Length: 338
Ligand code: KDG
Image (tube, rainbow, N blue to C red; front, side):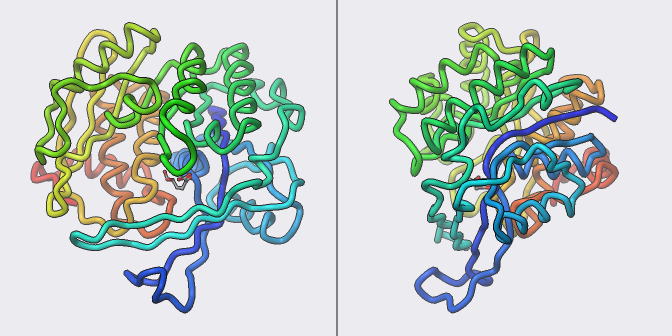
């Protein structure tokens, strides 16, 4: 079995029932989620020997977060137990022109307060083929940034392929802070995942010719910034899932990739959105799976975008689609309706 590792924070997600607003809710649905944990669940589901690295308190809520990962086959042996808090995020699901909302309550969580010495990276990355992390963990604290960098360095030394989802989070840091941390991490990255906003805010690439207010996607502008990013940082792949329009009524979903030779724009799906959270993570996991399976660049992209389109139909952070279900969509009806 191929060993893959992801590192990050898993949080308690408290969602208002249905489409209720925060101020209206009298109860919350409690589940667990977090960018890199969501990727781990998908990868475990696709049959990889998947390990999630983090720190969680020894108390029962920490245990419950561990159990949520185990339930889907993620190996939790590298989760260090200690610290005081499980991070929380509250979510309110929008509809039509009303956007979804997230409120974080994650300061001083166990992983935000963890130290590099808490983790035995040599052991963690032994025989590891792929390491995935994101721009969320470096944003949660100075310690989070140090842990991410140490992990990336160790993974590279161990011979793993590295992917990062830039995942800019405006509630966690400013573009200036993000760039000073994220640009430095890029030397370890093979596969850089991020949309135009991430590229601009985390790395300082201002996409020319991309006007998100026009309501229309200019794919050729992606080709230009992908090439610029690859030239500066030497990535093997630059890739992004793409919201085809920023209008509330268009749920077009596609993706683009540049592998140093060709630029591909995937098939477009018309998604029925049940829960957008984790859509990007399911995309990252799909891409990693496609590339680890030895698919061509284009095939890996199509697998990733189909996986991600399907995730939008599932409530919660985790994508619980099987490989077969994803392949069926890839090979199916050209209408692209999900
Ligand atoms: O990508 C999904 C994440 O945004 C969600 O799981 C919460 O990890 C989270 C974050 O930091 O926003």
